[in-house]
Image 1 (tube, one colour):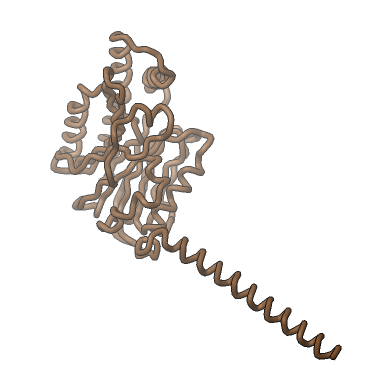
Image 2 (cartoon, helix red, strand yellow):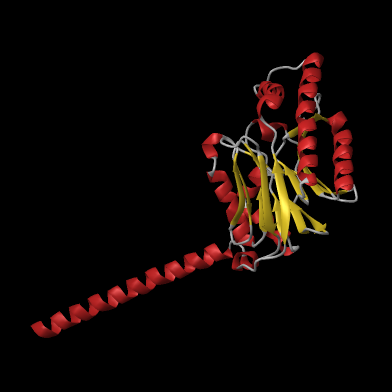
Length: 304
Protein backbone atom coordinates (compact mmCIF):
# COMPACT_ATOMS: atom_id res chain seq x y z
CA UNK A 1 0.00 0.00 0.00
CA UNK A 2 2.73 2.45 0.99
CA UNK A 3 5.37 3.32 3.55
CA UNK A 4 4.40 2.74 7.21
CA UNK A 5 3.87 5.74 9.47
CA UNK A 6 3.80 5.52 13.25
CA UNK A 7 0.44 6.89 14.39
CA UNK A 8 -1.12 7.40 17.81
CA UNK A 9 -4.78 8.03 18.59
CA UNK A 10 -5.54 9.63 21.95
CA UNK A 11 -8.67 9.77 24.11
CA UNK A 12 -8.92 11.20 27.62
CA UNK A 13 -11.65 9.72 29.81
CA UNK A 14 -12.13 8.54 33.38
CA UNK A 15 -11.74 10.64 36.52
CA UNK A 16 -10.06 13.62 34.86
CA UNK A 17 -13.04 13.98 32.50
CA UNK A 18 -15.83 13.54 35.05
CA UNK A 19 -16.52 17.24 35.64
CA UNK A 20 -16.43 18.08 31.95
CA UNK A 21 -18.77 15.21 31.06
CA UNK A 22 -21.23 16.28 33.75
CA UNK A 23 -21.28 19.79 32.29
CA UNK A 24 -21.87 18.49 28.75
CA UNK A 25 -24.69 16.31 30.01
CA UNK A 26 -26.39 19.32 31.59
CA UNK A 27 -26.05 21.33 28.38
CA UNK A 28 -27.54 18.55 26.27
CA UNK A 29 -30.49 18.28 28.66
CA UNK A 30 -31.19 21.96 28.02
CA UNK A 31 -30.31 23.22 31.49
CA UNK A 32 -29.63 26.94 31.78
CA UNK A 33 -26.03 27.92 32.55
CA UNK A 34 -25.24 30.99 34.63
CA UNK A 35 -21.83 32.67 34.41
CA UNK A 36 -20.48 30.61 37.30
CA UNK A 37 -21.62 27.41 35.57
CA UNK A 38 -19.71 28.35 32.42
CA UNK A 39 -16.61 29.17 34.48
CA UNK A 40 -16.75 25.79 36.25
CA UNK A 41 -17.32 24.00 32.94
CA UNK A 42 -14.36 25.78 31.32
CA UNK A 43 -12.10 24.87 34.24
CA UNK A 44 -13.14 21.19 34.10
CA UNK A 45 -12.55 21.17 30.34
CA UNK A 46 -9.05 22.64 30.72
CA UNK A 47 -8.04 19.64 32.84
CA UNK A 48 -8.93 17.28 29.97
CA UNK A 49 -7.16 19.48 27.43
CA UNK A 50 -4.00 19.52 29.52
CA UNK A 51 -4.04 15.72 29.62
CA UNK A 52 -4.51 15.56 25.85
CA UNK A 53 -1.45 17.76 25.36
CA UNK A 54 0.55 15.74 27.89
CA UNK A 55 -0.28 12.44 26.20
CA UNK A 56 0.47 13.93 22.78
CA UNK A 57 3.89 15.00 24.02
CA UNK A 58 4.42 11.51 25.44
CA UNK A 59 3.50 9.72 22.20
CA UNK A 60 5.59 12.10 20.11
CA UNK A 61 8.56 11.37 22.37
CA UNK A 62 7.99 7.66 21.74
CA UNK A 63 8.26 8.18 17.99
CA UNK A 64 4.72 8.81 16.72
CA UNK A 65 4.73 11.04 13.62
CA UNK A 66 0.96 11.52 13.49
CA UNK A 67 -1.30 12.13 16.47
CA UNK A 68 -5.11 12.24 16.51
CA UNK A 69 -7.54 13.18 19.29
CA UNK A 70 -11.01 11.58 19.37
CA UNK A 71 -14.02 13.68 18.40
CA UNK A 72 -14.64 16.66 20.66
CA UNK A 73 -12.30 15.25 23.29
CA UNK A 74 -10.92 18.75 23.70
CA UNK A 75 -13.61 21.23 24.71
CA UNK A 76 -13.13 24.99 25.05
CA UNK A 77 -15.14 28.15 25.22
CA UNK A 78 -14.77 29.93 21.87
CA UNK A 79 -12.68 32.69 23.44
CA UNK A 80 -10.04 30.11 24.45
CA UNK A 81 -9.85 28.23 21.13
CA UNK A 82 -6.95 30.19 19.62
CA UNK A 83 -4.84 29.67 22.74
CA UNK A 84 -5.39 25.90 22.61
CA UNK A 85 -4.53 25.76 18.90
CA UNK A 86 -1.38 27.77 19.59
CA UNK A 87 -0.27 25.23 22.21
CA UNK A 88 -0.94 22.33 19.86
CA UNK A 89 0.98 24.11 17.11
CA UNK A 90 3.94 24.67 19.43
CA UNK A 91 3.95 20.98 20.37
CA UNK A 92 3.83 19.94 16.70
CA UNK A 93 6.73 22.26 15.88
CA UNK A 94 8.89 21.22 18.81
CA UNK A 95 8.34 17.50 18.19
CA UNK A 96 8.17 17.71 14.39
CA UNK A 97 4.84 15.86 14.19
CA UNK A 98 1.42 16.19 12.62
CA UNK A 99 -1.31 16.72 15.21
CA UNK A 100 -5.02 16.32 14.54
CA UNK A 101 -6.76 18.37 17.24
CA UNK A 102 -10.43 17.41 17.52
CA UNK A 103 -12.02 20.32 19.36
CA UNK A 104 -15.57 21.22 20.35
CA UNK A 105 -15.70 24.98 20.93
CA UNK A 106 -18.76 26.57 22.50
CA UNK A 107 -20.10 30.12 22.23
CA UNK A 108 -22.38 30.52 25.28
CA UNK A 109 -24.64 33.28 23.94
CA UNK A 110 -25.21 31.82 20.47
CA UNK A 111 -28.21 29.69 19.52
CA UNK A 112 -25.90 27.55 17.38
CA UNK A 113 -23.20 27.41 19.99
CA UNK A 114 -21.23 24.35 18.86
CA UNK A 115 -18.29 24.24 16.45
CA UNK A 116 -17.23 20.59 16.13
CA UNK A 117 -13.88 20.83 14.40
CA UNK A 118 -10.78 18.89 13.37
CA UNK A 119 -7.71 21.12 13.13
CA UNK A 120 -4.53 19.74 11.58
CA UNK A 121 -1.27 21.38 12.58
CA UNK A 122 2.10 20.39 11.14
CA UNK A 123 5.80 20.22 11.98
CA UNK A 124 6.28 23.87 11.04
CA UNK A 125 3.79 24.85 13.73
CA UNK A 126 1.21 26.08 11.22
CA UNK A 127 -2.41 25.07 10.68
CA UNK A 128 -2.62 22.97 7.51
CA UNK A 129 -6.43 22.91 7.43
CA UNK A 130 -9.56 23.14 9.55
CA UNK A 131 -12.60 20.95 9.00
CA UNK A 132 -16.01 21.46 10.62
CA UNK A 133 -18.27 18.40 10.92
CA UNK A 134 -20.64 18.46 7.96
CA UNK A 135 -23.25 15.99 9.26
CA UNK A 136 -23.98 16.52 12.94
CA UNK A 137 -25.99 13.76 14.59
CA UNK A 138 -29.76 14.52 14.60
CA UNK A 139 -30.90 15.90 17.94
CA UNK A 140 -29.02 18.30 20.19
CA UNK A 141 -25.85 18.32 18.10
CA UNK A 142 -27.64 19.13 14.85
CA UNK A 143 -29.78 21.78 16.52
CA UNK A 144 -26.81 23.61 18.04
CA UNK A 145 -24.05 23.16 15.42
CA UNK A 146 -22.83 25.82 13.02
CA UNK A 147 -22.81 25.00 9.31
CA UNK A 148 -20.18 22.41 8.43
CA UNK A 149 -17.50 22.21 5.76
CA UNK A 150 -18.67 21.44 2.22
CA UNK A 151 -16.19 18.57 1.72
CA UNK A 152 -13.44 16.73 3.62
CA UNK A 153 -10.18 18.60 4.04
CA UNK A 154 -7.27 17.22 1.99
CA UNK A 155 -3.65 18.33 1.69
CA UNK A 156 -0.13 17.00 1.27
CA UNK A 157 1.55 16.24 4.58
CA UNK A 158 5.29 15.74 4.00
CA UNK A 159 6.55 12.66 5.79
CA UNK A 160 3.07 11.13 5.93
CA UNK A 161 1.27 11.44 2.58
CA UNK A 162 -1.91 13.03 1.30
CA UNK A 163 -3.81 13.57 4.53
CA UNK A 164 -7.51 14.31 4.90
CA UNK A 165 -10.10 14.64 7.61
CA UNK A 166 -13.78 14.22 8.43
CA UNK A 167 -15.63 13.59 11.70
CA UNK A 168 -17.60 10.57 12.97
CA UNK A 169 -21.13 10.59 11.41
CA UNK A 170 -19.66 12.00 8.18
CA UNK A 171 -18.17 8.54 7.68
CA UNK A 172 -21.63 6.99 7.33
CA UNK A 173 -22.11 8.61 3.91
CA UNK A 174 -20.04 7.12 1.05
CA UNK A 175 -20.61 10.10 -1.24
CA UNK A 176 -18.83 12.42 1.20
CA UNK A 177 -15.44 11.01 0.16
CA UNK A 178 -15.72 11.05 -3.63
CA UNK A 179 -14.03 14.44 -4.05
CA UNK A 180 -11.39 13.63 -1.42
CA UNK A 181 -10.54 10.42 -3.25
CA UNK A 182 -10.32 12.29 -6.54
CA UNK A 183 -7.77 14.59 -4.89
CA UNK A 184 -5.55 11.62 -4.06
CA UNK A 185 -6.45 11.06 -0.39
CA UNK A 186 -4.09 8.47 1.12
CA UNK A 187 -4.90 8.65 4.84
CA UNK A 188 -8.20 9.70 6.38
CA UNK A 189 -8.39 10.97 9.95
CA UNK A 190 -11.87 10.19 11.27
CA UNK A 191 -12.10 11.20 14.95
CA UNK A 192 -15.31 9.89 16.47
CA UNK A 193 -17.45 9.58 19.57
CA UNK A 194 -19.79 6.60 19.90
CA UNK A 195 -21.58 4.80 22.72
CA UNK A 196 -21.66 1.20 23.83
CA UNK A 197 -24.83 0.32 21.93
CA UNK A 198 -23.26 0.98 18.51
CA UNK A 199 -19.73 -0.27 19.24
CA UNK A 200 -17.99 -1.93 17.44
CA UNK A 201 -20.58 -1.83 14.63
CA UNK A 202 -20.07 1.86 13.85
CA UNK A 203 -16.33 1.39 13.45
CA UNK A 204 -16.77 -1.69 11.24
CA UNK A 205 -19.11 0.36 9.08
CA UNK A 206 -16.56 3.16 8.77
CA UNK A 207 -13.93 0.69 7.56
CA UNK A 208 -16.05 0.26 4.42
CA UNK A 209 -15.18 3.85 3.45
CA UNK A 210 -11.48 2.95 3.44
CA UNK A 211 -12.07 -0.18 1.37
CA UNK A 212 -14.47 1.53 -1.06
CA UNK A 213 -12.14 4.42 -1.82
CA UNK A 214 -8.82 2.66 -1.23
CA UNK A 215 -7.26 4.87 1.46
CA UNK A 216 -5.81 4.12 4.89
CA UNK A 217 -7.75 5.36 7.92
CA UNK A 218 -7.32 6.15 11.60
CA UNK A 219 -10.59 6.27 13.54
CA UNK A 220 -9.91 7.30 17.13
CA UNK A 221 -13.09 6.86 19.17
CA UNK A 222 -14.33 8.03 22.54
CA UNK A 223 -16.76 5.41 23.91
CA UNK A 224 -16.13 2.94 21.10
CA UNK A 225 -13.65 0.88 19.09
CA UNK A 226 -10.63 2.75 17.71
CA UNK A 227 -8.90 1.30 14.66
CA UNK A 228 -6.10 1.89 12.15
CA UNK A 229 -6.63 0.16 8.78
CA UNK A 230 -5.22 0.25 5.26
CA UNK A 231 -7.13 0.43 1.99
CA UNK A 232 -7.70 -3.33 2.01
CA UNK A 233 -9.37 -3.12 5.42
CA UNK A 234 -6.45 -4.85 7.12
CA UNK A 235 -6.20 -3.90 10.79
CA UNK A 236 -2.86 -2.57 12.07
CA UNK A 237 -4.09 -1.35 15.43
CA UNK A 238 -7.26 -1.66 17.50
CA UNK A 239 -8.35 -0.31 20.89
CA UNK A 240 -11.58 -0.97 22.79
CA UNK A 241 -12.47 2.03 24.95
CA UNK A 242 -14.46 -0.16 27.36
CA UNK A 243 -11.69 -2.65 28.16
CA UNK A 244 -8.47 -0.64 27.79
CA UNK A 245 -6.80 0.90 30.82
CA UNK A 246 -4.90 3.37 28.64
CA UNK A 247 -6.96 4.76 25.77
CA UNK A 248 -4.10 5.33 23.34
CA UNK A 249 -4.09 3.56 19.98
CA UNK A 250 -0.64 2.89 18.53
CA UNK A 251 0.08 1.51 15.07
CA UNK A 252 2.62 1.31 12.26
CA UNK A 253 0.20 2.09 9.45
CA UNK A 254 1.04 1.86 5.73
CA UNK A 255 -0.12 5.03 3.98
CA UNK A 256 -1.07 5.03 0.32
CA UNK A 257 -3.85 4.37 -2.18
CA UNK A 258 -5.36 1.13 -3.44
CA UNK A 259 -7.05 1.45 -6.87
CA UNK A 260 -10.74 0.51 -6.52
CA UNK A 261 -13.65 0.29 -8.93
CA UNK A 262 -15.88 2.12 -6.45
CA UNK A 263 -13.54 5.12 -6.38
CA UNK A 264 -13.96 5.41 -10.17
CA UNK A 265 -17.70 4.90 -10.57
CA UNK A 266 -19.12 5.48 -7.09
CA UNK A 267 -22.68 4.32 -6.40
CA UNK A 268 -23.08 3.48 -10.08
CA UNK A 269 -21.79 0.07 -9.04
CA UNK A 270 -25.07 -0.46 -7.17
CA UNK A 271 -27.08 0.50 -10.25
CA UNK A 272 -24.99 -1.79 -12.44
CA UNK A 273 -25.45 -4.65 -9.97
CA UNK A 274 -29.19 -4.04 -10.00
CA UNK A 275 -29.29 -4.04 -13.80
CA UNK A 276 -27.30 -7.28 -13.94
CA UNK A 277 -29.64 -8.89 -11.41
CA UNK A 278 -32.66 -7.66 -13.41
CA UNK A 279 -31.08 -9.10 -16.55
CA UNK A 280 -30.74 -12.48 -14.89
CA UNK A 281 -34.37 -12.39 -13.76
CA UNK A 282 -35.59 -11.44 -17.26
CA UNK A 283 -33.41 -14.10 -18.85
CA UNK A 284 -34.76 -16.76 -16.50
CA UNK A 285 -38.34 -15.59 -17.11
CA UNK A 286 -37.94 -15.68 -20.89
CA UNK A 287 -36.32 -19.13 -20.76
CA UNK A 288 -39.18 -20.34 -18.58
CA UNK A 289 -41.79 -19.02 -21.03
CA UNK A 290 -39.99 -20.65 -23.96
CA UNK A 291 -39.82 -24.01 -22.18
CA UNK A 292 -43.51 -23.87 -21.23
CA UNK A 293 -44.42 -22.98 -24.82
CA UNK A 294 -42.38 -25.89 -26.17
CA UNK A 295 -44.05 -28.30 -23.72
CA UNK A 296 -47.48 -27.02 -24.73
CA UNK A 297 -46.63 -27.40 -28.45
CA UNK A 298 -45.34 -30.92 -27.78
CA UNK A 299 -48.53 -31.95 -25.97
CA UNK A 300 -50.67 -30.44 -28.75
CA UNK A 301 -48.71 -32.38 -31.38
CA UNK A 302 -49.16 -35.66 -29.46
CA UNK A 303 -52.92 -35.15 -29.11
CA UNK A 304 -53.47 -34.10 -32.73
